[in-house]
Image (cartoon, rainbow, N blue to C red; front, top):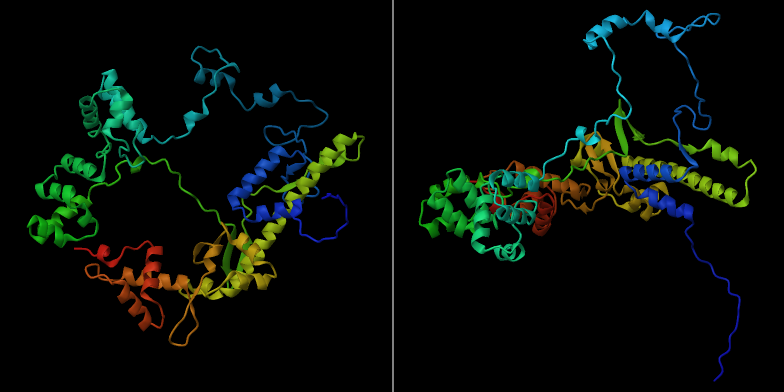
Length: 480
């Protein structure tokens, strides 16, 4: 059987994403902080890109003007030259200055080689849990072996202050006896914060109860044997097991509730996440005004030197490099402008659909999907999805992610328009906030109350919305 090689021409059409389109799509889905980081990175790597300082006109930046001013703000007469000594002699009394700042009458000058203050000296650094415990260990123990074991134990604590490894592992790793490890561990458990270095929640609560003098037999028994009932607020089962009065159980439970289940939490180094709105919606008189947030956003332009150099005599390699850099900078500027324009159009469409929300609040939020806005602004749904991801809007009702305005609908049984699922969640939250804490509403009761107000919803949907709101079920909300 012979194998024959042939060549043939074939015409075909296919979609190819150009580099410009890829850049535009990538910038579109970035948050505001990520966009600013991208711009700063591009400014550092692309010499053809420049940050404009002229607010009035980016295309014709103002040339820097050198102004020589006298100390009193007036120009000296051109026909008479005035020396620096003459300019400052009338304003500064050097004799008094010397007497005030130098008792010897001599002026001393610091050289440039003197060490400047370190930047770290001006930056507040939060103390970590490990540093705090190691400092107490070094101040309390002089034995090198105990210090080594203590450092090993501290190094195996999690962020909540609990020991994540067993005593046997500490013994094996540190090469020490179990009795010595237990002795050092007991010492560490007396350090601040109280309850740290415990192996589990029960041990931590017992350490804290013992420290505050609340280690009554009933409190200790509940912590050791009935934490699972305590978690579910099954106080009747605890009273039955301990053969105690219900009021005494409640008193002991209130003592336990005052203890800290995560003793190392206040030393957490997690930084807060700040939200910077991408767009503002203000109500001025009877109209809403949309304003893009350009605060802190660099104003970009092409570097004049690179543009002028293109007209000079350059070799082919240098000219190709400069053209590539200029083209990359131009694409970035156009993509950023297109991104801002798209965000504005999408916000304008959202404002049109959700006008009642901006006027009156969450209860008037309407059901809306991505297709509604996509058809209104004549864009693809995937583009709308990218625009609304990690973008936030400041509104008269608060700060919301743009995704917040898109949600499913809940039908009403009274003939009115359907409600947005977010509005139903807000209604559930309001009902639970106003309930009797001694007799909270169950999910069935919440579904019945919503049905009576015209909202057709199932019990499992109520449970799902309650969990989304991070609200406990009725048996755990009950207070005694």
